[in-house]
Image (cartoon, rainbow, N blue to C red; front, side):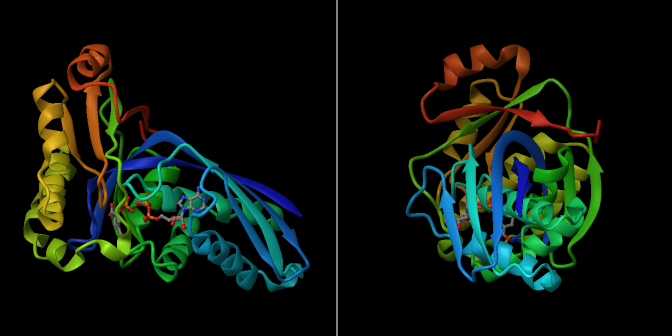
Length: 282
Ligand SMILES: Nc1ncnc2c1ncn2[C@@H]1O[C@H](COP(=O)(O)OP(=O)(O)O)[C@@H](O)[C@H]1O
Ligand SMILES: O=C(O)C1=C[C@@H](OP(=O)(O)O)[C@@H](O)[C@H](O)C1
């Protein structure tokens, strides 16, 4: 029994750790998973390009599906993933991996799960694996559905889904280090709930660029760093910029017509470029 699943990536607008509600939008970085279910009770995981990465999230994802579908008679799996999403940089690698692995397992079992159900199962798995504080239902939805989503993570509810403004390309600034969820100062982030809540309302009212920046400043303050990449991106002509997720990557939106000029000014090192994915939200 073999199945395949894919998920795209996302960038943050609002980090849900501050007050439970989060927002983000889809981009076309991609994770693909293949799951071969076996009758032997062993789970083998291969994360392409990351031989020493933690495999608990992948294992827990398949284990949760086997628990939910006990009649399959399957007890183990061989899981392989390939991805263009850098890990533990705030770019939703864990949400995309969970989505893709859950979808691949469903495919192998011959069951159909809708994207919100995948996000809800993924939230439980991500918390159990220690890679999420709130369950990152915001990221799971943004990755799968595309467009700009607003969610209540503790309630696992999709509150709004709007199209992202057309004509912008995502540029991602990638520092050379990772931030693991266990090291993220979540209590300092929660102290900024009012400011983040105001940024959330701003995004919902249509000011995605202002919201991204304000949210990123709050997350930087929690981390004790400066929003240096976002400030430099705005000075180089970006329309919007802000630290993504728990960082350290910065999501930047640039008018597509000005992308080359922006990259000439901002620099092309430690940068990846992706398309904004609106899915069917347009
Ligand atoms: N392609 C992948 N395949 C399997 N597991 C992955 C993959 N990418 C990320 N993960 C899991 O997610 C963890 C990283 O989670 P996290 O630090 O929250 O990163 P991010 O902020 O990118 O979501 C990794 O340690 C690994 O367990
Ligand atoms: O752990 C969490 O609950 C969250 C992690 C962050 O994402 P990253 O995993 O991309 O850092 C953030 O964007 C999200 O709103 C909530």
